[in-house]
Image (cartoon, helix red, strand yellow):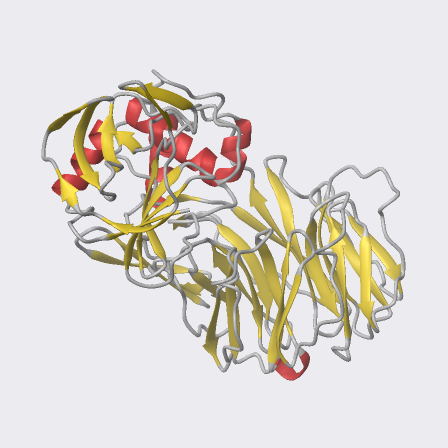
Length: 494
């Protein structure tokens, strides 16, 4: 019987839980999050067999992807924190506990079956076993998040693909084209390579197929009325056809691919299929289905209870600053929600609406521009302040910079502008600093002209200051208490 090693690390202790079903590792990321049950289902058809799932186990983060062993007799499941669960498959290592900038979104095995790669939404690639690193997109500003990766010829490289159809080639994987510059009707969700490795297909959620290199077009669902969006694709053994899978478990066959069954009517009503994995012999496939996250309704100022606690835990786990988790949607929670919405291009409602809930499921920490050193980054475009250590965003704050509106002081006309550039903290006042434009709470000045990061009673989700960078009074108090803005630290405004 296979075994399951699940490591759950709390703040000050380690617990080893032994159960049947898988070999894996789940470690709470910083800050620690409570383990909860994230149910999933695995469906097998044709030559594929069912080997188990993590349903019923208390996981720190949900399962997000699956990869098959080279003989097709086993598989791995990976969680968004990089925890790996092996079913009739060898365990080569996991990422759980690593300070990931973005969540894990996919994995693929090497052709030998003695290793695998894990990829995160920012394009960071992590090899295990005999998998080698051939490069990543982690230091490139992407137009769209990475969806997953597939191996290149001989396993000596890989392709990464993004939701806009951008394709990134490394090692033996050669670039044959992409949809990155096209205007798509729907986002890309899957990719498969030809047997030669000299071409590949991309598939979008409407079932539109894009063929590159020696990949031939065999048909699509792009013009069909679908009951559920397409979530992935897999090719048959000879590459003369492919399967598409829908979120409801429906399967569409094209070319030489033979229908082996579908999960329509088998997927529980509160689950949805997220991935289709073809068997190496081309005669079967598996589907991974996940439980839908519950709709917690609209949460806004004054709300209390378990749903608020869950939101606060999610924000803290992604580095959005809160002084603590108290189950109360207070001013500090609204500041963190605004920061999350700004960082992810959402409407700045300050409430947890359906769009915000949906984004919670697919994103991680914001990306920094700097790659080394201790730096305070002030992103004027997104109106957020990030505390960055060697490229890793430790904390993110809601901020309000200069409005760029004209104002008059002592008969002179000025512009409420926050200057861009690289500065450093040069002066500070531990208390209220009374200036000609108002009272600044515990300011940290980074220009000699009086521009500071300071606390203020009003930090709206838009530029509103006379040029300074506002954060909440509670936030600046915490910064002082934890020496976040020492004299001399670099401040990069862009």
